[in-house]
Structures are given as C-alpha cells and as structure tokens.
Length: 514
Image (cartoon, rainbow, N blue to C red; front, side, top):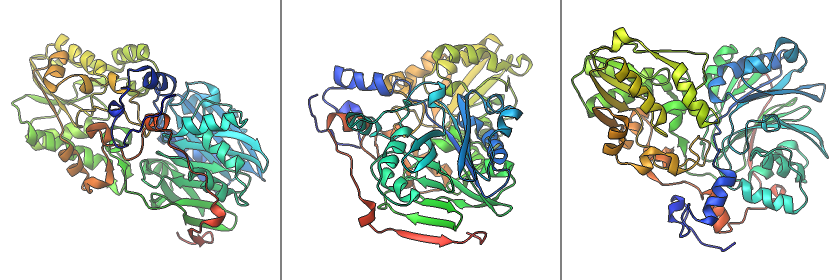
C-alpha cells in the first residue's frame, strides 16, 4: 500500500486519496461501516452477591448497549461467565444468573462497533493464557486497533472475536510483566483512542481510563465492597455511595491487599466526549462533575434565547430530549406538552444495528397524541440529527396529525464528521449535516424552521472549559490520529517495557475510605 503522510487532527478528507478512493473506502468498509460502539461497564469487588449487584448495574446501563450483555465472576480464583445476545433481562434469566458465582465480578452491555452482533463479540471477553484466565470489558474505540491486530496476526496470534477490545487482551497475554495490572498497563501503552477498561483475573480487578478521558467511569462503595460503573445511575441502583470519578489516565487495582491508584501514562489534553451530555448518558447521571439533566435543560434554554418563535406548545422527541424541551419551555414561557407517547419496549433507534430495523422501529416507538398536536404551532425539540431518516418520519407523523406549524430545534450542533472514539457515526457520508446545508436539511425535513445549537452554546451549558472536550464530530478537529492516519501513514505503535518506566502509585488498604 502506498504510504502517505496525513496530519492528524483533521478528517480523512485531508487525505489525498479521499475516503471514496480504493485505499480509504476499503478500510472503512472493512472496519467502520458498522462502528456503533457505546457500551456500559460495571464491576463489584468484595461482596458475596457481586454478580447480582453487577446485574442490577447493567440494568441501569441498558441504554448504553442493547445488543449483548455479559457477566464474569471470580470464585476462589476461578472465573465463571455467562454472556448472551439481547437485553440484560433476556440474557440473565434467574437460573443463568445463579450459575455465575463469586465475590468479584465485572459486567458489560454492548452494541456493535468492531464486528457484528454475534455471541463471540459479546463482552466481557474471556481467555485462558499462560498466567491463567482473564476477562476484559471495554467501552470506547481504539483508533490503531486494526494496525496492531494485523501485526499480531502476522506473528501468529489467533483472535476469537472481531472486536478491537481483543487487541488489549492479546497484548496483555504477551506481556512479561509479573503483576496482572502491569501487564494491562503495558498493553494500554500501545493503544491509542478512547477506552474505559475493566479486567478480572482470579483475585484482582483492574479498571483503567484513557489519558484523555473520553469516556466516564465511576468509583463507589457498598457494604465495604468497591463498585465501578460507567455512570452514577448504576451506583444508585446498587445502593452504592458515590466516591468519585476515575481520573483520566488512572489505573485502579482492586486486590486482596486493598485498592491501588496508579498514574502510569504521560498526561494528555483532556478530551471528554461532549455527546455524553447530549444523548448517551441517562439524565439522572452525573458525568465529569455535572448533572446531565441540568446540562440538557440549559441546552434547551439556550435554544429558546437563540431562536425565539411564536408557538402554542413545546414538544420533545422522547425520552432523551425531554430535559431540553423542558428547558426551552421554561425559558420561552411556551407550555410543554407530551405530543408523543413512547413505547418503552422498543429499543433506541440510534443504536440498533440495521437501517431496516431503524425504519421499522420509529413507527412503533412513538405514537402521536392528536389532541395535543392538531391545529397547533409546535416547537419540536430533539437532541441531535444524525442520518435524518428518523427525524423526517417524525415530522411526517406530526403533519399527518394536523400540526399547523413545526419549528424544529436541535440541542446539539450539526454533526458533520465521524466519531472515532465510540459513537455510532460510521462514516460522514451517512451524516446529513455533512452533505447538506441547514436550509437544505430544513427543506428535506419539511419543517417551517430549523435551528441547531451552536458549539459555544453547547459548551456553555456544561459550565466546563471548552478545551476539556472532544468536539471533533462538530468541528473536524480530532485529538488523535484517525484510523486512516495509521493505515496510510504507517504510524508505528509503541513497544514499551514498563519495568523500566516508573509511575506513581497510591495504595490504600480496604476498607479504609478512598
């Protein structure tokens, strides 16, 4: 393959081949056409009912992944696991959950990115290797995983899944470090991208968050046990006390000797995913020190100030847009009403694996309330427009039920670029805002007006500094090399001997407060 240097921090359109060329298109068709990962993690260490607590935590994190779920527990040093395709309640029938025993457990909910929705890709992944057995769950996407995988396969590695997460397992298994946590650290020093990791062997659980902090991870306590979860709402359902969020670049080791906090990586510029606030997280969660619900309400209020309009009611596309619609209604003094009734037994259309399912899902997911809609001038609030297909169908439903005017307000800016760090945006050609102007999108959706949130307004609503966020899907500035960069520029991965590189460690014996 021809080698081309592409400056990172820009989209692949900077590549002279362009993404529609044979070079880039083959890469994206192979690895990224179905990239849809946004997963949920949960772990409990030191509780006799650890698997059941993790099960509850995964229930609270179901919104982060609906295609598969798994729990791996350790009992007297031996790992037991159950994984399945589907929702948490379907995968873990009572008799199945009873078979997973131990006082330490990790769990994972998933929808597909690398690989499809098949059982072998459901996490936590479990392997036997020279040191014994280990399992690993991962939230995020590794931008250089495909390069490392090819190199490992050339050296004889055999992969059991098509996920990028297995690259970390393979690198861990090849490490010569003595401690399990150091093997994980050595592996993570060779990958680039977004990750929160939970790994378990016989006696220890290791948690890690990437140095840029793309994805969230919480630490809690319950009955002397330690609890980890992607969002604080999972700690709530487990009756766990919030302790703090795991820091970017932090590795936490839970072992019989206590809890150890390690900072083995070079500090990096913070790159929190701002889309967590827009759509991904549950509104009752706290992320990056902020209430998700409060941020979304401020986003709605910003829109009311940015684009006031005369209307009779404010409506949300439920459920993730409800707080923003309430914020808009409060700021504009236009009454909020429930114009759509949601069928909660239908999954989130944004994260289902096939467009045919999306088209079917929107028809049964939302039912319009004609008595609320008919003859009304409506301000419709949605959190984002990704492909535009769902929004167009929703607008048609409102028109069919007699809406007089529809003024569409979107609480995020136009999504113009693919995310390489764990969000369902496979390539920019499928993103409507990358192909159309706002006026063209308005005409396509057949609405009376269309206004997006500004990037400044989005950041302002979080009350956090702009430079702490990844905004690449909105502004085309990527904080790391992209997958195309690694393929076309032949960027080499690092081989690191952690035994020669000291790092900071803080150790606290259980059950002391941490």
